[in-house]
Image 1 (spheres, rainbow, N blue to C red):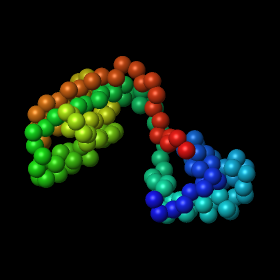
Image 2 (cartoon, rainbow, N blue to C red):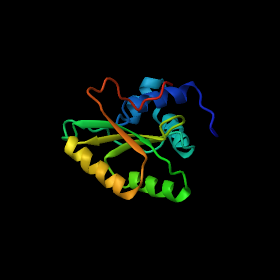
Image 3 (cartoon, rainbow, N blue to C red):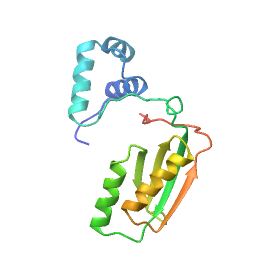
Length: 153
């Protein structure tokens, strides 16, 4: 990491992780500073890449995306062309919230959020029509126990 982070930076980052929509005045009060130094620190952290994209967290269930599947993928294909097509297929699908390449028996794990099982099947059929995979296992999440984007600062 190219930037030195001190305790005040950590407090600012923790406050932003909790609720980035709060005003600079509120954050400055919380971390025991004034608005301008806090703004300068946030700007420095953004420029250094510590703070990335700012977004809003939506309630998937409230929007009708009630099914969350974790999809385990094994492939016998490891060529650069296959990987490029596979990554493009994942990036082109809004249903894929996360994708990870793994060490071990499973090559990839995806977090896929859809309306229901039929919607998952449409996703699955589209994916396997674009790229060949050796084995796919879909696990339906019965209950989300914890979900956070917050890092333990």
